[in-house]
Image (cartoon, rainbow, N blue to C red):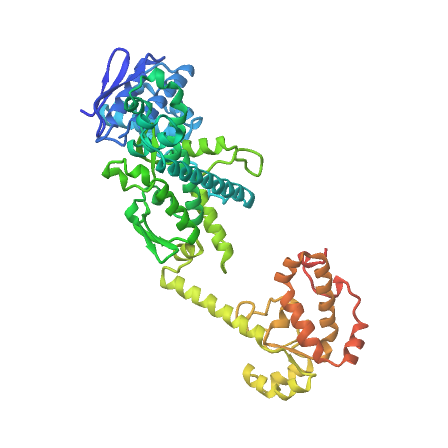
Amino acid sequence: MPAEVIRGPLALRLSLPGLDPYVVELGVLANPLLASDLAEGLAAAVHPHGPIGKPSTVRAFVSTLRRMVRELALAGFTGSAAELTRPVLGQFWLRSHYLVEYRTRTMLRAFDQSRQRLAEPVRQMVFGTNYKRPVINGPLKPYTPGEWNRLIDLCRAEVREIWDNHRRVFALAEGGQDPAVGGWSEANAAWLLTRMGPVSRVPVAQHMGMTLPAFTGRIGSIARIREALFPTHMHSIPYLVLLTAWTGIVPDGLSGLRTDDVRWSGRQAMLLSYTKGRTAQESAVLSARASRVLEQWIEHSSLLREHTPAALAGRVWLVSTHCEPTAATFADYALRSWAKQRELTADGGGRLWIDRRRLRTTYIAQRGQRGWSLRATIDPNHSPQVEGDHYLSAATPAQRAVVEEIISDAQGDLLRRASAPLVVDDATAAARLPEEVQRLGLGQGPLTELLSGERDVFTAACADQLAGLHGPKGKPCPARPWVCLLCPLALFAPRHLPNLLRLKAYFARQFRAMPREHFAATFAPYARRLSSQILPRFPDGAIAAAQHLVVDRDEELPLRAEEVTP
């Protein structure tokens, strides 16, 4: 039996996968009836019958069990699980966190499946939809440039200091001798530790034939030499931070590296193979600086590998903990402790905590800014390539057809913007008028209407208002007056000069009132076409005469309320 309830002072005897049976004490609770039923549900939810398979999960469920019994007792409920009502249970869940609701639901479901004692309305509630939903954090933000620079500069300085100290003590060891023969000195102590490994004071004292009280004065020097020769967890953190910051490899990929995953690719670059938890085996060619950091760490820990069992010596992140070789884990508490000891501060003045996922996010953000593309817009933790492959690709034939139509419209718009405007007062434009008439498919009647002004719109003479370039086909064109400046169906004649100059004055007013970037995105193409390609084709005398008709006010144009100059 994976779990059972022990009566008396309430306790659980558990047998979880890979662990010896052990007892979890629940103690004396305010409502022993409800506590006993929930404990039975917890026992029934243990692996292999339920989702609970780790001691830490059991402790979390036990804490939630105590909380539910305590809060319901304070609210006046003293019965068993069979006496629970929908209002009592609903009020408890509504004022609780998502995990509290999830755990109590799990225990009540397992209890009812084994005992069938819940009232039917409560059973429907327990097996129904959760009241609360887990809070899903948004995408991680990259570190700011100031935070990033402080972190990288600190890590580089610390790696340089650690490495220089290691080389200094290692050089001392090469010139030392056995302290049992040559006496105690820093060089002789380093010589001894290079041969004994990261041992404690006890083996060193035994080697020298001294008692621990007599050896007490040398303990400090032993610890300093040991830390210099054999890297510790704190020594590995700046190496890992730099390697993550300069490669962008996922945390689980770097943590599980082995020495046979590292191969040189040329003289300055390494080929690194790693396993990404969500996918499979991947590889990356490291930059020169990332290759140097990894090579230096492997050399820094090479002496420790000589005193490590073969099963562990293949790990890249090998450190000395409590005088024993072990694989570094880079747990959050270790990273936080390292950052706290070095008093790293964020831009806002608070603590700057190291999150290895944010290091990867910052690397991707900086790489995106160095290339042609800006950062991904859906999730900044994704590269533009991943975002395009996963979010922007068309999955169905209908979606692909829509995407192709959008691309076609965009390409047509670019071609239309590149075409020269048709100004009939210009001799060159008049010479190619028959060609334009053939391109637009016009007959003698429409051409006469264009030239006489019967087909005028506000800005130009329109070849066909129902052509639907800027709206539904068969309906009058809904475009704003300045859109005609780029329209291939527009024809500009001398009678349009006053309105064209009014548009020019409107653009000038908007330029003075709007931010430059906003104006460039909204009006710049039209203003450029008007000033550089349309107005220069009219005689200066005609422009001067039309200028007298312009009063430079918004009332001259058919504007909407949101288009009025502020």
